[in-house]
Image (cartoon, rainbow over the protein chains, first blue to last red):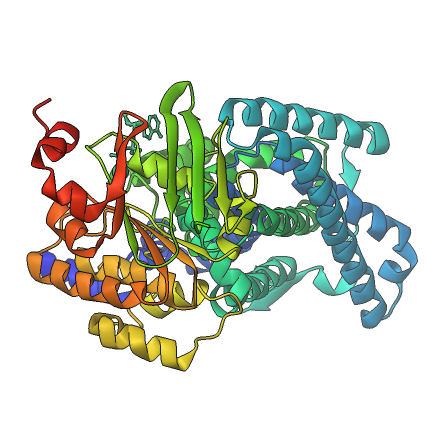
Length: 330
Length: 234
Ligand SMILES: Nc1ncnc2c1ncn2[C@@H]1O[C@H](COP(=O)(O)OP(=O)(O)O)[C@@H](O)[C@H]1O
Ligand SMILES: [Mg+2]
């Protein structure tokens, strides 16, 4: 048993969990083509959840701030990018790959920019007065989330809003009897690219070093002469921008969005953060992939259990590792 | 003029009044020792100096400048380093990353690093190891090394010998003597032999107040006073 544990540990330990889930699902599902489709869907969903969850995890890790308003950035990101796509409908419909891609890039950039600015505003006006007071953080950020949802309702209306998609992301690749939706592969690849960038910033730069140290022990970083509160604004803005980008990508995935989409997703996002371990983006990625894969496999195998499966996953993991799979602090 | 003056400091933690009235003067150079029983308020005093608690009323003056209201980071940048009781090591960071964080601009001064590696060879041996895997003594050395990776004027050190083996305590005493040649040390200690060997001036805190201040030699000679202020059987 110990030998097995050591071998597993050397091979990657908890990082292998998504692989294990995928293998078990392969046996249970039986049909390889369905399995591939579900796996790609799960990986795409996982990477989008990662974008939405990573900021939340870092914000909690660094300043102990519980932000239930994080979902507002997801919803706004979705609606802002969808509106930009609608405005650039000409480019989107044009028979030019380049114009299509430009429209998509513009919509994502708009969401990111919105996230940065709104994140700055949110941190300065709403979060700062309630540092170190969890109860008031919960109340005020839930309040802010409701205000944000109502604002979206006022601007975009309550009927589901349809989201444009560039032609080159429509359709599927067919390989034998396996079909892979192109948008899902794209969402996965973009998510991986963002993860790699985030990983490099955290692990190869001085700012990243300060953030990782601050997540472990904020007071000590301050005693070494660094203003963690100023660093925190930057992290908060980045996290909000990533959530907005995640929302924008989710909008293209669902193609119909409603003002409460962020709030609907937030339960899953919190589960991702808790499973992964607070304050670590590697943990968040792991949690996001697990939840993404489980949701799709269970949705196929036992649709009635789809919602409960994430809760069960979370409880099982917390019983095994009370601080999540890869918490930032040792 | 003394390097650091603490005047009539009263510090509350939440609704608890922990320090009632703490005043003492740390002269420049050498080791100043703060003694006192468990729970007397020594750690709270150091945290109030570095700005992690805010005294009210009361003041902390460093080189004649009132630093009481400054942010902890800005106090640190005046040239004050802090080695906390729990050592404050970043466990997921490597030994070198812990050290480089303590530099202001992210670069090592080669001569200083070499001196630290001479004093604490384990820190050279385990440079790329994550710090959580170090032994307790090695962590304590890393925490002290962080305070000396660049010139500082004052180092606040909270019970560095707690739980360490005697041989390590001896090595630490040598290190402190060397540091004290260029930097003032404000040392909180329970190990009286260790404190006595290093300290020149001292104060005793008892129940949130300074109960005695003077020279270490006088205090060491007065066993009745030691019994009254430090013994557990009161
Ligand atoms: N975070 C805290 N919350 C409440 N009480 C505290 C806290 N820290 C210290 N105290 C109390 O303040 C008193 C002094 O503590 P401390 O300064 O740590 O003493 P010392 O370092 O001399 O052992 C103790 O009675 C302790 O229980
Ligand atoms: Mg103490």
